[in-house]
Structures are given as structure tokens and as C-alpha cells.
Length: 91
Image (cartoon, rainbow, N blue to C red; front, top):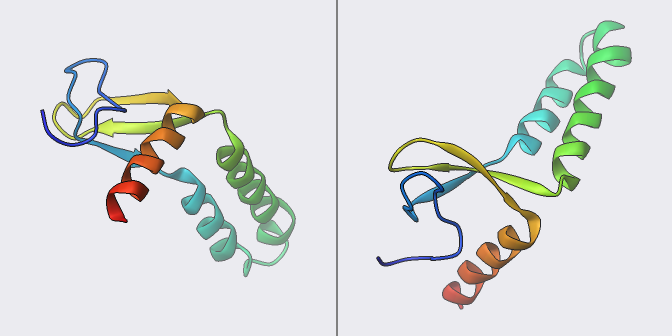
């Protein structure tokens, strides 16, 4: 099996995975709802900013297997190894 061997699907053992990143979505929603008077300023904007920060510092990262479409989580340490693998490969 070619490619990375760090993050594998727990169901099919495939290594064709993609990271789901909700952090960017929450920050984008915060920007989009910031123009709505009162509701956006006092409820939605703080809510989406808080959710974005929570997802950014969470100890687990979410992935989706591209072969069987199953979602799963990996620890932050495993995710850091995954990132370093592709950084080293790019150099």
C-alpha cells in the first residue's frame, strides 16, 4: 500500500483519508453573520467564534476515509505525525 501509513481507516484499513476541518467554517460563519444587527453581533458572532476556537484546540481531529466514506477521529499527536509526513515529503 503506497502513501502515508500513519492515519488509517478503522473500518477498511485504507490510507486514503481526508481531514475534515470545521474550524474554518465556524470562523467564516462568524464573519458572515457579523453584519446582522443585534442577532449577529450579540449571539451568532460570539457563538461561532467560540465554536471555532473549541474545534481549533480540540485534542482529536476528524478524518473521512475516501474509500468507504466512514468518518473517524485520531489523536492530536497522530495528526501531528500525519502533518509532518507531508511536510518532509514536500521538502
